[in-house]
Image (cartoon, rainbow, N blue to C red; front, side, top):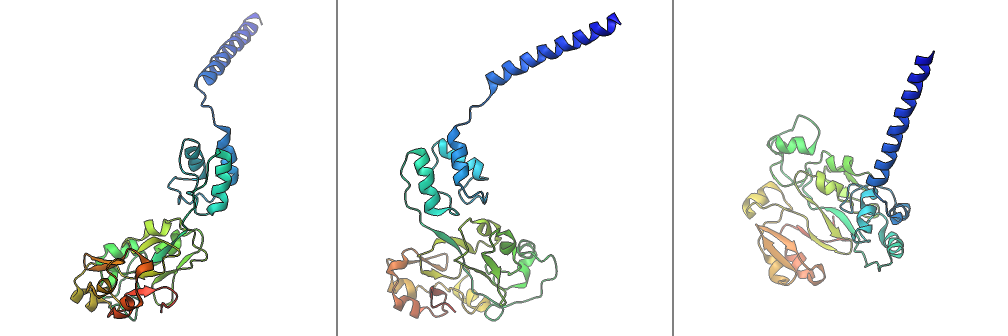
Length: 264
């Protein structure tokens, strides 16, 4: 009986010893959490979409108290930015709302298909498999990787086989941009109303053969709006939408450059 009591006392002493050690270690090693992190987390929408450039809202909140900008949450917009700014005691700089835009109009009627793709119904897989059957190596493949990646239902593949964005729903998280294997989806300021809907870098002759609405790099648009459009790698690019003239758009022989609101 005495040996049992002694064993119990010994185990109790050992337990107490390690409890003290653990308690001291915790006090020494614990990381103090800035209370503002929790306040910011309460303000953030909790979408964990990564649009701010951080893996999730908790990471972004922690980064803010360490000096990151308060206005990177595109889901919450300026309302959230201003609320966070009040917590941090700083001013919230104005945010430019961005939305995803699919820079391709090469649908089943406009683009040329040279074969039928049979395989995994994924843009990434089709892109690796000799381009998925589309003659243009730059155009939308239409298998919906972007649609599946969007947690907000803002992008879908339409009945013509090309992805399109609902700008009223899109929050500019950029997940579709990251998912597209061909890099045809870009984040653009929502008020940028002129865009070249093509990213082909093929020569004009090759691009036109592959798609009726491809940019052929002719430069006519740039000549009419030299301060607003540049041609790089056989493809026009709008650098200042406000300075693009109607004549620049009208002169495009394939209709690749579009003023949004008049898009077909």
